[in-house]
Image 1 (cartoon, rainbow, N blue to C red):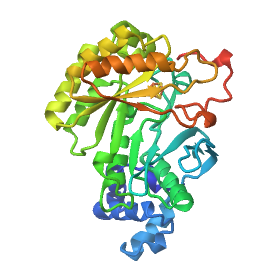
Image 2: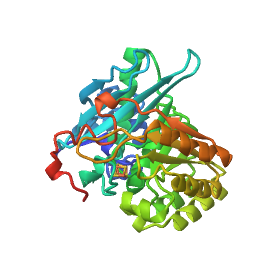
Image 3: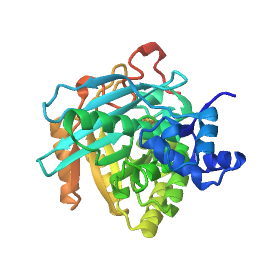
Length: 362
Ligand code: SF4
């Protein structure tokens, strides 16, 4: 019998496997706790009966994700963005970015941006991953493993623990909802070693309304971010094919219902693309949308991607855009784009070798 990776199972699946082995279901999570604490040898899982440890060692193994490459950005000595490229068991590649924000000794935020899928079916026009197409969903272990690996790296290099996790890497998390939510549970629950508060975990969607509705009902109180990128229907449809499926009105309704249920503000993510969505009418449309939904706006500098014809907004347009928001009483933070020199934009590392000829939206 081929041994299977314990971490590749969702908890409910593993519980069924344990019951089939004639073991109580609760033992499954005990074994997973050991696995996520870095114990790969079943004989060391000392709160499991010896006979079970033996059965497990014959049927399962515990994987560890290790990076194929780690790129250090040379931008700022004390706050470097680090990008990890992982090769998975089946040879597929994903990427993860570690984003430090060390304002002072007491304010040290360290965020891991994790992938939820290999590739992505959403085909956003400004995103390198969108040109790769969708390959498969990641397992819970592959999602948590990215944080595990980044946490180890940060502990050894900076003596710093991970404070925040964002599901903003490759893939649309709402389309791998169960595994993403289970990963969020493992990352936040007290019985596992990560212990990242639920309110420090953010799931970012391009606006999959059905997923937002599900998240509103979830007992996990994680944050929701929505990549809006335009509050003008035609422009949004041109940038993000998902907008052809869910209109801005549908999205707005879903966000209002989400807020009514959770009382948690939504983060609106808005990538500023030069001459595309950074004009006055764009800012005015964003004001209208943001006023209808309890939210905070994050403007994001675009990281230019080789072979894709979008550019970062220039400073004058960006300032004017923010000014319109400010005059409307809306505060927008601007997220500095870091890691330009390490291809830290979503999907850039894994697609670096794809030539312009083969780069076309799927
Ligand atoms: S921006 Fe996100 S959802 Fe859109 S194609 Fe890229 S990875 Fe997929």
